[in-house]
View 1 (spheres, helix red, strand yellow):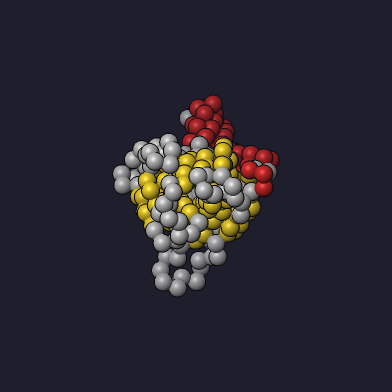
View 2 (cartoon, helix red, strand yellow):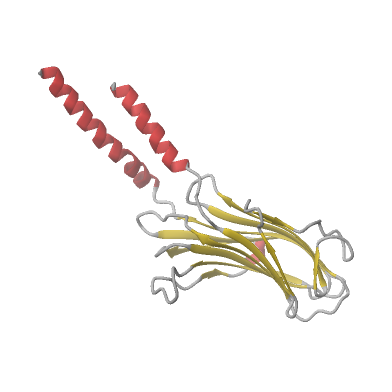
Length: 246
């Protein structure tokens, strides 16, 4: 194999490894509660998408009704362009219906049994929590979100499972980040939205939760990528020189 052809093959292999899609046997579930009432939506066709049968357009039309709330929801789970990124995106519209309310509305979007991302040598993973409020109406109305990343034990009492890493509602609708150590797979990634609506109130908002490998400094990444191929190229060149001399 010529030197140029070898370098081309090595470059393509490295690029493919960096952008390979994330793999997971994850299950997406949305649980909606208002204290006494619960509705569970599941990803029946395993396409990473859950939506209510119709959009909620007002307090009497569309969505699903849980207690005194009408909810329109679209939630999706997507591997990112980089193989180490996993993201859950949720958009919500919530209305007070005028029916009895037995407690604040909580909407939990859970993606469990994640077998990625794979942390770098440092073992560090980033956790993101984001909330975007488009509109909130009604006296005393409020929306908050918490993102949680945690290990799921491989079996009962698995001592390698870790405590959940939790990010509370970001300030002023911004993003918040933290870093945690990976110890074992699989993971769970969840976002818990808490909605309090005053009489006749409504809320239109979205949230993003994600976990991905903490990036190493650019120089280290380049070095880690190039060194294995440099060694292989050096060995091949030596063999070629020996053969030429012989």
